[in-house]
Image (cartoon, rainbow, N blue to C red):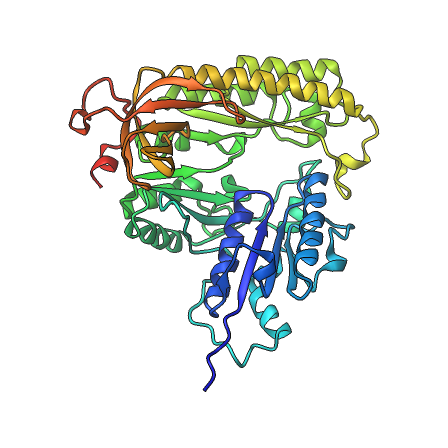
Amino acid sequence: MSEQRVYRVTTHTLGCKVNQVDTSAIVRDFAEYGFVPTDENADADVIVVNSCTVTAGADRDARKLIARAREENAGALLVLTGCLSPGKTSGQDRADIVLGNDGKGRLVEDVLTRLNLRDELTRKTGHDGFFGGGVVDTSSRARAFVKVQDGCNRNCAYCVIPSVRGRSRSRAIREIVEDAKVVAARGYHELVLTGVHLGSFGADFSPRARLTDLLTALLNGTNIPRIRISSIEPMEIRDDLIDLMASNPRICPHLHVPLQSGDDDVLRLMRRPYSRDHYRAKIEAIVASVPDVLIGSDVIVGFPGEDESAFENSMDLVERTPLHHLHVFPYSERPGTHAATLTEKSQTARIRARSERLRALGRDKWRRFLGRHIGRTLPVLAIKPVGENTFEGLTANYLPVLVSGPCVSGRECLAHVRAVEDTSKGGRLIADREVDPTIWNDGDISPYIPFGILRA
């Protein structure tokens, strides 16, 4: 009897953490049929491109990936999935199988059918009905990602995500808690909750639930040391969430709260349901209640109707609001959106100049926030080694730290911060691991991470 052939699959992912989680679920589904992952297109029987369409650049990147895959392995089965851009090929004409997000759950079975492998290969296990459910392992064994929500019911003028992801839908809380128990059992120190519109979690339940209901269940039902929330809209940060973050250090003091514009007229054109004053008041309330919280944000520059005065309002709001980290996006027109019908466009050169001004402000605020931590002792979760006796890590409030001294990847060490180092990403902390863990309760040590992490 001949030995069964080994089939290999490689994947390429563009876009957000939700897409990354989806790709990991696809790889997991292939593994359940015996497929082996490979990093090289040339070695693969199946090549999967999980696309993003949030910007025109993302569409171009998908086309480039598909062209490169065809060039490097003309005989492989090429699958294009993800947030395919409506009305554009995005390379679809060069793919063998094209599936949107709603088809990811059947992607592997479609591949088996195309390769005539349905009778040859038998699935070993299975996942729940929510695609992307389950635990996504990471190589560092430090942080695990669990997808808890997908889709969006909003109608922002610049965004096509609701049309490619569908309406908001949430996983059952009990299933997420079970996943979190698996995360803890595998030795992870941090659970990252991901979703397309995380703040809408539970709105589709009957009776309705909130994100705080999920967080409370995770706190009560698991012993995972860190629970991190990904991006959440300002109007969905309620007092109960702020209170929970303030009272329980297991919830990481870190939020990403999109702003998009600091001008009320532009916000209305964007169909964003808040004002600049509401946004600033919300951020100030979080910072006042949650020790050492890091607030990140997104800002779009050059949206149709943004004149010089509107842009200066954005600069002013970012400067006066306790935001610490910025993602700046030059406006990119998306076909099929309301924004594409607006006529008052900004010139590319003007958008580029404004973007650089805002990025410079963001870098300055980031370095100032990093500088506040010099001289402090912080628990740092080791993410990956970067050299002999050196590793990269993250604090609970998401500060990148380069630490000298022995520490095991996926574990936490106490580190004394001595400097801020500029990098291509704007800067990180430099620290020495020179602190005796027995002095954990010393008043010099930052209080925002539970001491149980060090003793796990």
